[in-house]
Amino acid sequence: MNRYIDLKEVSDGKLYTSNDLVKAGCGDCAGCSSCCETMADTIILDPMDLFWLTRCLDATAADLLSRSGVMELGVVDGVILPHIRMDDDTGRCPFLTEAGRCSIHDSRPGFCRLFPLGRYYENHSFRYFLQVNECRRVNRTKVKVRKWIGVADFERYETFIADWHYFLKDLEEPLAGNGIQWAKQVNTLILNEFFFRAYDARDDFYSQFYERLEAVRETVSAYGKEYGTEQKM
Image 1 (cartoon, rainbow, N blue to C red):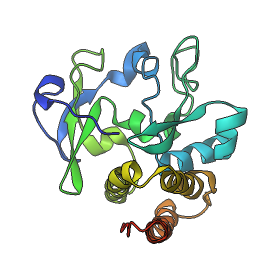
Image 2 (image 1 turned 120 degrees about the vertical axis):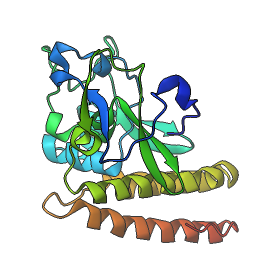
Image 3 (image 1 turned 135 degrees about the horizontal axis):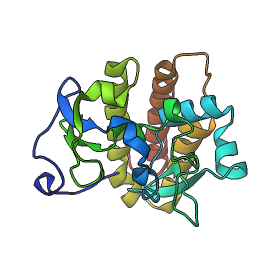
Image 4 (image 1 turned 45 degrees about the vertical axis):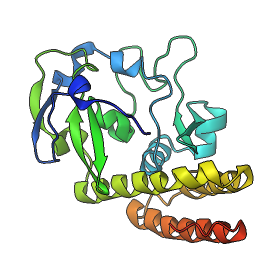
C-alpha cells in the first residue's frame, strides 16, 4: 500500500535497520488491544501471511474468504489483495479474544508484527521508521527491530518483503493503463497463484514463492504481448 506522508509528522525523524534499537517495546501490551480494534481494512495480507494463517488454522484461503469470513478482498493501488475483515459491529479483529489477546499470535500477519513500525521504501529496498502517533502505550522500551518483528530467517524475510512490494509496484502503471480486460487477467493470476493455490506447509515457503513469482512474471509478459503492450517484469 502506497502512503505519501511526511516522516517528520508521523515518526521520530529517524530511519532504522533491522539491527537498530527502537522504542517499540510495549510490555506485552499489558491488556491494551486498541491497535487490534481500529485498523479497518488496512491489514493487507501478503503470500507469506496466507502461508502462516492457513497452516495455523488448518484452512485454505477459500475457507478464510468464504466460510469463516475472516478475510475479504479489496483493491490496493490497482491490485486486488486480501485483508483481514474486522467485525462489522465492533471493528475488532476476528482473532482478538474477549480478554483482548491475539489468538494467532505466533502466526499473526506481518503488518501486525511490524506495528508500530512502518517501512520506508527506496532504491529497491527499505528501512524502518517508528510511528509515534499510533500506539497508545507510553514509556515504551527499546528493542532490536528484528527481534520485535520476530520472524525466522530474517534476511530472507526482508528480501521477500522488498521483492513482493516492488513486484506490485511495477504493476501499478500497466494495471492503470492497459485496459480492464488486461487488469482482470493479471489480478486473477495474482490471486490464484500467490494466494488461492495452496502452499505445501512441509516445504520451504520462499522456494515456493519465488518459483511462482518467476512463472507469474513470465505470464504477465505474455499477456503484454497478447495486448500489444510488451510488459516486462
